Image (cartoon, rainbow, N blue to C red; front, side, top):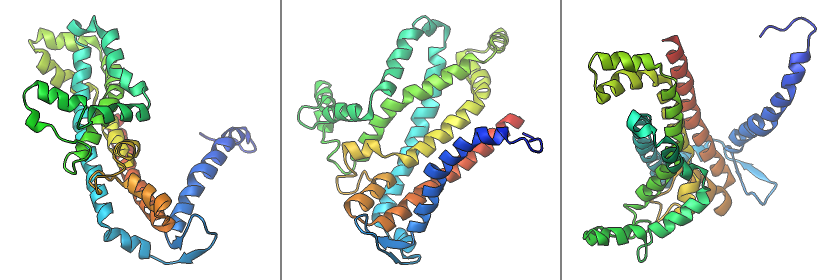
Length: 294
């Protein structure tokens, strides 16, 4: 946008947004990086400059490594379920046969998105309960009670139980975004493919997938970025336990800052989360730009 000399009206309109972003986003971000070089308590005004020691601590922090590994698991499973499975699900819901039931099916799939994560966590706490939980009762009903276990109390299954709950809540939103993209595809493309003898699976891969490419890229990277920031689900369900088996970077940052009162190292963890998120955001921008050029 070109500004005429002496015309400050556009700047005045943008000024509140610029001030808001500066005060609540960029200044705290810079302050957080600055705090990474200090040892300090949230209850004290004094700070001790420690240089790069907090960053060095990050490389030998076993909990941070476990947390990063869990975030990667979170991202991989989220991509498979929230992006690829959601695309397949959206295509099925937009099929002629299922379209007659579309309003009811969309409500069913979108309902979890509208429920508070705290309520969902309490619900799944009951589902995973080792004594009276629905999951173990269902396994016993099927005659495979040997698979029953304390899902949240087992260090092997805790992180996957948390991820499963998160997928159940989030897949509806991604599915609805794909449905919107599929509805924008010209019907002539499907009709032409049908005339050429393409079946439903062939039409899905030859028409649907290429036509929702940009939406797929955006959903893919938004899902991965969300997996790096995930906090509520592991914090409410397991608080990172048992041990540190379901720890994520955000939960580790919270516990370091507000329970262990090591705000300097918590700032370093926050900087790591920001850098990882920024890298994926830049990839998102690059991929989206590439998609438009096509």
